Image 1: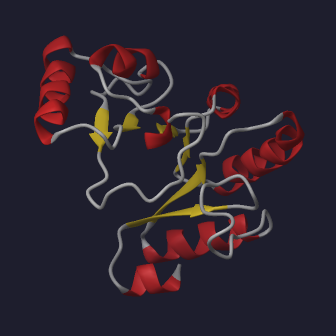
Image 2: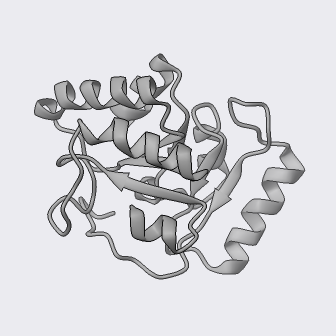
Length: 169
């Protein structure tokens, strides 16, 4: 976190406990760290995004609810997720949501579907730049807006696929 801030990042994303894609490859933060992360980011003028982008199993639901209450309480800027349970809880708690690349959004119809839940969508990594451009043009042409009433924002990964595939995704 400090290294990203010192390097000049204007936003960071982080995982908590086992509910993020990098839980086993890095030292994840704990639920109790959410308050500290939020305070550090706000003091530094940096946006904070929490990744809850794994497949959520029934045994994860209690921890998920605890994490989301902390996210809401301490004003994390948004949750990055693909699992419908996380999407639903964020909507219920009025927590800003970004749709993760794990949702494999690769066409305008999917953008329209997720626009009911999120103002930002991280596109599928498999898309070409032309495909991304075409989707962005269609968002503008069709005036596809998110919950805020603003046009949907799209993001893309430019460094390749670093996450493990699950269930054919």
